[in-house]
Image (cartoon, rainbow, N blue to C red; front, side):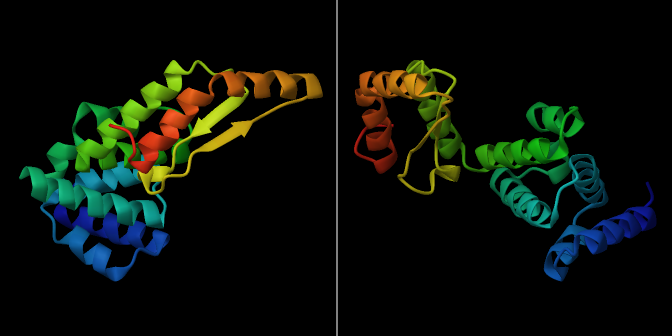
Length: 180
């Protein structure tokens, strides 16, 4: 792709997504290989406006932090797997941004993995879903229960009562009262 073709494609995508001008200017100011790599990822993942803006911010922060080009960052296996994979674009785009956040904030990613491991260790039935706050931006733990009968509700409430200490530990971990 020539420089002119890349710029036209970027401007077209930015216009279609109504990307704010400062983001477009920063994108166009990047090296050619970086601009094209961002364009390819944005197209394949069908990033929406907010997702594209967040991705640009995170990619620039990672590039500065690591002293690497955005094209080399986007060529990492973990990101390429998401960019090239099949499946619904919204889920892939969300996973892509989560992976960028994990790269940008490695301690946050490690903490989330540790909490996920704790949740898995509880071995809760599939009708119980424990949801961590997005980016651990609060200390609120959400527990969702899906039931179809009163008997199932009774059973799940008993399971939760048995798992109370493990769930309480998760809450303490989120609140900073327990070691992560």
